[in-house]
Amino acid sequence: MNDYGFVVVHIPHASVYFPSEYKDGYLISEEELQLEVRRMTDAFCDELYDAEGFNIRVIATVSRLVCDVERFRDDNSEPCAKYGQGLMYTRTSTGKKLRENNLQVREQILAEIYDPHHKKLTEAVDASLEKYGFCLIIDGHSFNSNKRVKLDNFFSMPDFDIGADKYHTPIGLIKELTETIRSGGYTPRLNSPYGGAITPMKHYGKDPRVFSVMFETNRKLYMNEETMVHSKGFEKTREFCHILMRVAADYIAENHERLISEHN
Image 1 (cartoon, one colour):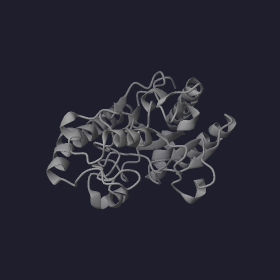
Image 2 (spheres, rainbow, N blue to C red):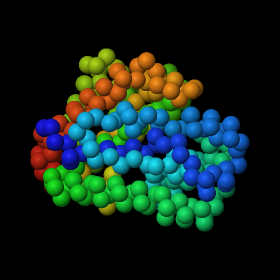
Image 3 (cartoon, rainbow, N blue to C red):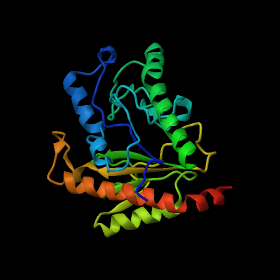
Image 4 (cartoon, rainbow, N blue to C red):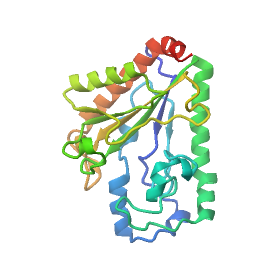
């Protein structure tokens, strides 16, 4: 199937932009802030996941250090909030105080950044459902090759991590992607170092027509993690990310009717 209009590509963490009205509240130096940017930004994911035919793209416009649109809106529902990394980060990745938990600033972030982003994502999914009767969200990320998050990657990190949701990510899709990664000469892992796959709250856990999968690419494959520039492996990695996108989209296109009926 060459028409990938039913796919919504979501890129939440590639931006390094800091609106000036928010930058004043940071409690760390500019040098420390730039180091945190290098650690936390999913650099170049807007390029890695730009395969031809995937024209519906929802890309966060500001750095996740300003607003992490991937987090739940309510901190009580967000596991990372207890570490100071809900939708408004108050702690760095090393636990250092980043900014105060200012409720007025948080409300401004919700109104100006978070809610408009999720409105755009929801509208894109709704448009796909109206036109095609189903939708696939591809959530594009990368991960730091040196940050050990879970026990199963303490001694080794995968090349690609497939993030899956129990409701919105079919088991058959996971198997298809895992086999594709292995056949490409790479190492796959499921939900590690990071897990899950985003779905708008309007559809989350209740609309079987919405499918979602997260792709996490190891940054060592395509960039210099110290300088944040492309490495020699960038184009090869980008081409393989495009393959994964097409594999996921083709699987859902071919199987969505069966998968939806099985949910019902």
